[in-house]
Each structure stands twice: as C-alpha cells, then as structure tokens.
Picture 1: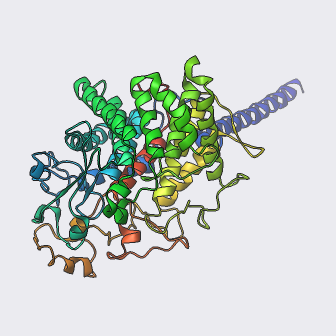
Picture 2: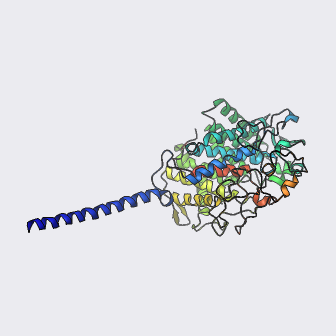
Picture 3: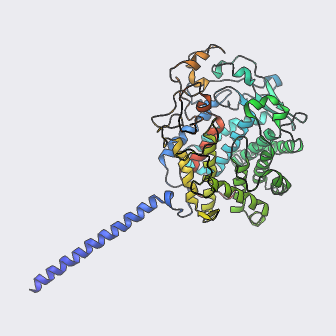
Length: 526
C-alpha cells in the first residue's frame, strides 16, 4: 500500500515536471520568436554595432553598387564589368582640363553635373550614416571608390573660384546616336556656369557633394578631404553671391534637367558645410532669413535631384536629436525637425495625413517618368529618421493626434524596398539582376550592343529596335518603374519606364544599406 502510494506520487511529480517543461519551452519559443520579429513589430533596444544580416537586402545591395561601375567614364581601373572599357578619355581637353572621369547620367553618354553632384551627395550621406553596415557586407570600399570617381571629376570641373563646368556633351546630338560609350567619335562640348552666367542650384549642389565627401575621406585621406572642403566653401560662396538659376542662364538645360528653384540647394549645401566644418555661420544661414525664405516649413515635399528640402529637413533634424546645447534647443532647427516629422507622417500609410500619392499596393507614386525615384528616396529618408529616433530613445512622433513609433516608419521603408525587389503585382524585381524575373530590355546603349560590335552613331539604332533581349546585363540598374496602375512594359524604347539612372542608384544603395542590418546611428559625422 505504501509503495503503491509512493509510485503514484512519483508519476504525479513526473507529470508536473513534464507540464512545467512544456510551459518553459513555450515561453522560450515565444521570446525567441518575439526577438526574431522585433525588427518587424517592436522598436526593441537601441542597436549597437551591426547585428544580423538580412540576406535579401545584402544580395540586392551587392548588385546595386555595381551599377556605378557600369556608368563610369574614363580609363577604367580594376574594371569589373566585362562589356565596359575605357571611354571619354579626351573629355575636357578643349579647355585643357581632365574631365575623363565622372559617370554617365543614365542610358546615354551625357555627363550632367547637376544630377551627378546629387548622386555624390546621397552616396556620401549613405556612407556616413551606414558605412559600418556597408562594411558588414563588404561593400564600403566599393562605395567609397565610386564616390571618389565622381568627386575627382567635380574637383577638375571647378578650375576657378567662380567657374564650374556643369555638362560634358551635346545632349541633342548625343541622343541622335545609339552606340557604345567606348566608340564615341563626335565632339564633346563643355558647358560652364560663371559670374555672368550663374547657376546657383548646380554650384550649391556641387558644394554639398564636396562637403559631404570631405567627411567621408577625412580619416582615410586628410589631404584629399581638405581639398574637397576648400572647393565646397568656394562653390557655396559663388552660388550664394551670384544667385540665378542655371535654367535661365542656359535655357537648353530645361529639356533635360530643368530646375524649379535654387533655394533648396542653398540650404542643403549650408547644412552639409555646417556638418563638415562646425562653423556657426552655416547654421545661422539655414536657421535665419534664408530658412524663412526657402525652407517651406510645415509643407512636406518630395526628395529628388531637383528638390532637396525633405533631405535637408531630415539632415538638420539629426542635430536636434543628437546635438549639444548649441543645437538641441535651437528654435530654427526645431522647425526643420517638425517639417521632417510632417514628411514622415505623409509617408505612413495609416496616418491621418497620409499622402494619396501611392499605388493600390502601397508604392509611393508621384511621376510617370522615373517613378521609382520618389518611393526609394522617401524610404531612404524614413530609414534614417527611424534610426535617429531609436538611437536617441525618441519614443514616437505625432501625426494629427495619432502616435507612431520608429518601427512604424521603418516598416514603411521596408515596404518600398520589398516592392522594388519583387513584392508587387507583377512579382518582378525592378533591380536588374536581382531575383529570377527582372527587366531584360533596359533602355541602356552599352547594355544593348554586343561588346564585340562597333556600330557608328546611326548604325547602332538597329540594336535599339531589335526584339532580342540585351546581350549585356546592366547589373544593379534600378529602372524607371511601374505606371500608376502598376503595369510595366519591358521594351527598350520605353525610356520612361525602362531607363536607369545613376542618381536612382545612389538612393537605392542608401536605402538597402539602411535595411541590410541594424546599428546605432552615428551622433556626429566628424
């Protein structure tokens, strides 16, 4: 009787232990699952060094940075693109300048200084904010090399304080040709801005590119960094003291990269110069009368090669997130941060102030031409802002009475990246080379012509019109993107949807670098 009772007691205890083990296991599984989903659902702790790598973003980033190699002009060093070769070697020679470097704008052979400088500024910003994350997937050195390829061109394009060469090539003649850049034979005329023919927006954007790049190279090449900063200061002074739009000084540019104003570039350049120098005069510039005149406080705008206001607002808001006493309480900076918050509120799909400029499946959509520029640039800014919030322990933003966390903003950024990479009605990646399905008829001359063929200017049009897919893959190209109804026509002569651009590549590189893993936002670029 006693032995039987002890046996029952043992079985009871065993049952209790089994149940307890199951409960503990369930709790552990729940914790692990919550931790693994924390990037999706929770703000979680402030991240430290780069954490776990998100493989799809890593794969996409490694492709996206390669498009800069596809676009390089000049004598190529360590060329990784088998179908590309040296080109544009005599660019600038008419004025005894070496303008052989730089990058071709898109699918053509033009070097447009305005969007090229924007490419450099965005790429610099991406490296400064997410260099450790790029490094975690071995892409930092490649990105820095591409940046220097552009800034080397920009340095040579600025031979005098008040002279800046802003274009290489005749766009109308260039667009009458369809051949490889290696086979160009026509003249490559230069276009400049100067004191009597000003171009404030181009000079200021180039100043922003130089100032931001000076920070990128400050530790690795102090001499080069100092030279870039010297050019940046000179160009900003030139831009500010000789105010005038290049679209008015040089009306021919209106057909290609027409500017809608220069106030945003002046603020953008001054903001970067403040970060690069710590000189209070640049902070006073953006928070004083110029801010009141140009910043459009309280009115969200789109970030693009033509309008830098949203970027400026996010860039300056980091000073109020991380700045010391001289900046954290600055009322002018608070106006930029409040407007940056309004930009974020407009992007969040469930916000009371959400923009209607998006497709049925949630892609930000503003323009039929180069549609992907705006969702990618918006997502890049959102990734930055969410990281500023996390690192500074800012719990929420307010959107017309509703509260949103950093995780909500980051979720939006991921949604745009995921759409680009294939989570869309067509199940197609808009990043060339990524996934199993992506555009095969990209509007890009070099990609469309076999590397062993050398057609002249006019002969090459047969490759534009052929029904065969491109013989060369423009690896990492981000094409223009879908129409509002989320359709895409993969045809080589469909330039509005199928032409990639270097500045789009800078934006997607920045976005993917922000999503590839997590780490603390740097509190100062210096």
